[in-house]
Image 1 (tube, rainbow, N blue to C red):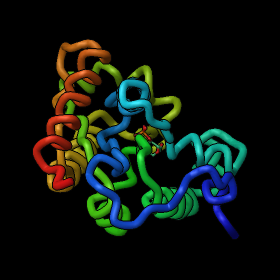
Image 2: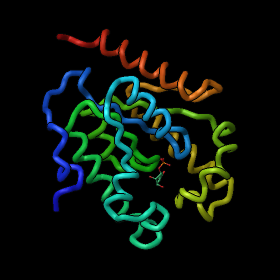
Image 3: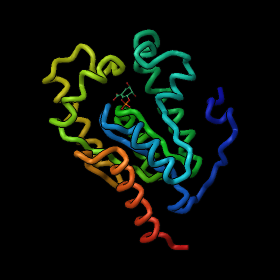
Length: 196
Ligand code: S3P
């Protein structure tokens, strides 16, 4: 069955896209701020922002915790892969992928080959203070001790740090300042690497 992303038919596929036209994919651990920052960057670059989790929720017509509970993580991961695969054939989008998407090698490879992958890095200490505000909506964190969550955090960090094109550390800057730094980095890479 055709994905909802194709069914909408508003994005033009493009092969051999120039650096300037490539999608920008944000990766990073749950609660690192991908949605907020991704939306700000999209606005500053006049691009569409696509939240893969939101697309999955629309397809199943239920929130993520319910999808995990009723349909299962395996089906969630398959849908996540299908939607990202479809989107990577398009251009000029800002795409936020869930923190678990880069666990799948096919997704990592596809995003790195087709898009600019931006990693939002956050320290464990800074992230820990956000836990209580995000745990209810993140089934992957539920039922785990703080030690288990820390282990997951560092396991994921290793995957992210080995699979990105550009990285920014989330520190005390405001979300808007971070988005501005990201936009500057992206524009600089366009200028430095653009051949035409
Ligand atoms: C997940 C992260 C979530 C969401 C789902 C699974 C994960 O997205 O995709 O709950 O495995 O890390 P965020 O990274 O936006 O929280």
